[in-house]
Amino acid sequence: MKPRLTLALIYGSARDGRFCDTVADWLLRHLPDMIEADILTVDPAHLNAGSSMARTEVERRIGRDLARADGFLVVTPEYNHGYPAALKELIDCYQKPWSAKPVAFVSYGGVSGGLRAVEQLRQVFAEVGAATTRETVSFANAWEQFDAEGNPRAPEDVLRRLRALVVQLDWWMTTLKHGRDTVVFREVA
Image (cartoon, rainbow, N blue to C red):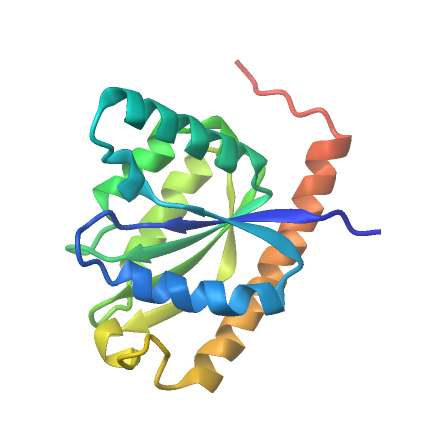
């Protein structure tokens, strides 16, 4: 019997008025029909808490959610040919929860659709021991790809690509969870 999985959907932007919410909301509408997993959301914008006590509590909650996750789906924009600082801070603050877990990407941006950010993130996630998936979904000129209600203008195409991404991510989540549960992983000092 396949174990129940936990997927963390990670918001890559912390900017006010970010387009990330449109893409993440679309994903949250469709992911439950595509994968049998508990879906958590991790938003680096929450780290901008007002007080140090509030930030500490948010940091703990994010740490627990990342540790609980069996895999990650990162929604990332591309800013100036790279990925956002808020996403880098999130990755760097929590090193251990990424290890031996898969990471998939949904990206958006201008002409490249965020793919330059994804290529850089593949290197970063490799360094923290994560395995990135091949399949991605990207939205070039993203603000033109969604209607006013937050739905893609070409839903059949992007849903087909999202299904391919989810099938691959589900396989990696299941396989790596089994590995983490049955094989002792020791880091070399």
